[in-house]
Amino acid sequence: MTQSEFLNIVMPFKDKVFRLAKRLLVSTEEAEDATQEVLLKLWNNKAKIAEYKNVEAFSMTMTKNFCFDKLKSKQAQNLKIVHSNYEDKQTTLQKQVELNDSVNWVAKIIEDLPEQQKMIIQLRDIEEYDFDEIAKMLDMNNTAVRVNLSRARKTIREKLTNTHNYGIK
Image (cartoon, rainbow, N blue to C red):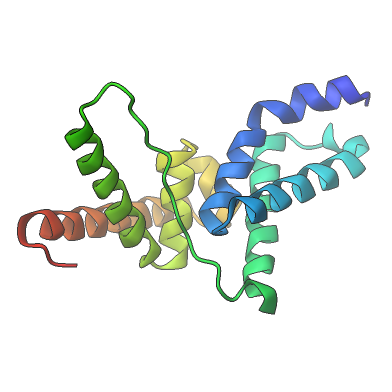
């Protein structure tokens, strides 16, 4: 496989790999390192890439596993999940502050979810994978993915509603 063929296969989803790594690791630098490691592993195994039916799903699984290993290591004790993908430049300053506050609350709520629910929220609602792909990546059945996603969304909705209505954390 040539370099250009490799790049044509890998580059369309490298941003998704980065976002998943960013979801799992706090710092942008850690996420960049994880992305680079995954891409390097893919490059080193480029001869085998053609064997995989879904290179993107394989890469996301590699990213998840790499990040979990990193989180388990002693040097990563202070890492936590953070998400701030939302930015709308055509809103008023007050609306931007409110939206930013809501995004921050959602990030805090997601941070408190069980690990499996965090992953499913990231893969489904942010990366927009379908249920079959998520089930394969996380080695779960389709129903379990749907149940966990439903529970995670319900928890987020309830806690965000309580925060907005009553100021309850």
